Amino acid sequence: MHVGEWCAASARAKYAPPRPRPRGAKVAQEAEIEAGGVPYTILRATQFFEFLPQIAEAGADGDLVRLPTGLMQLVAVDDVAATVAELAIGAPAGSRVELGTSARSSQAAS
Image 1 (tube, rainbow, N blue to C red):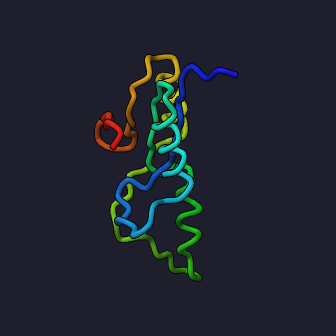
Image 2: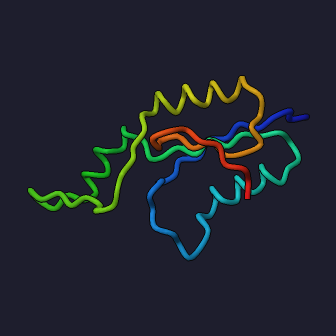
């Protein structure tokens, strides 16, 4: 089987603090795609707006809800799906495309 092009989506916490270790499977997936020799585009989306109830529930303690103090930039699942479709029918970017910031930007693979 021949793969002509990769278009992968990866949900990320855009404003997450740096971690001492790589983020496991997400980093490994991106590295494999980048090293694979097949034209690609990787869409990095921030956490989905639709997860907000679960985020609030996880911080609930009785009548009190504790939320992260850091910035949260959420994106709608429909926006992610539309962007994946747009990227999949276009030419491979050969880079990462960010979604969930004030503007979409492309980052060359590092």
